[in-house]
Structure formats: structure tokens, C-alpha cells
Length: 85
Picture 1 (cartoon, rainbow, N blue to C red):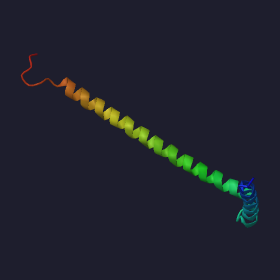
Picture 2 (cartoon, rainbow, N blue to C red; picture 1 turned 180 degrees about the vertical axis):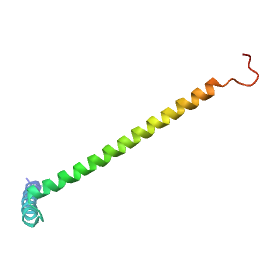
Picture 3 (cartoon, rainbow, N blue to C red; picture 1 turned 90 degrees about the vertical axis):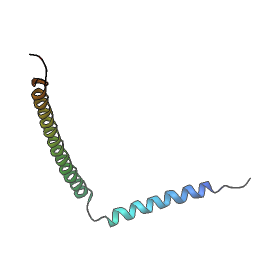
Picture 4 (cartoon, one colour; picture 1 turned 120 degrees about the vertical axis):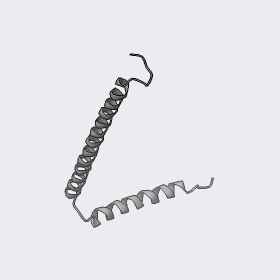
């Protein structure tokens, strides 16, 4: 029976992953706590920006709705030419 080499591949993948993880930890420019703080700040800033954009969109939609209702009321109240009173 011939060995397929899958075991060797799996061992190489595992060893490579461990070496990569170790190098990543050794060469990382920030500590884990600093990195988490940086990520939290980034997420909070983006959340605030998205919230502001949503509020602007909501205000614009409400204004457009109010304008449409006003236009509709103005046109619905006007009688067509030749219409009997």
C-alpha cells in the first residue's frame, strides 16, 4: 500500500501554522491590549459616522415626505379647469 502523503501535508501545515503564529506574536508592533484598544476606537468612530449618516438620511427622507404631502395637498385642493363647483 502506497502512502498518499496526506499525513506529511497535514504535519507541514500544522508546523507552518505554529511557526507563523509565533512569528506574528514576536514581530507584532503592538501588544494585544493596545491592538484591541485601537480596534475598539476604530469601530466606535465608524459606528458614530454610520449613525450620523443614518440620521441625515432619516431627516432627508422626512423632509422629502413632508414636501410630497405639501405638494399633493396643494394640487389636490386645486380644481381642474372646467370643473363644476
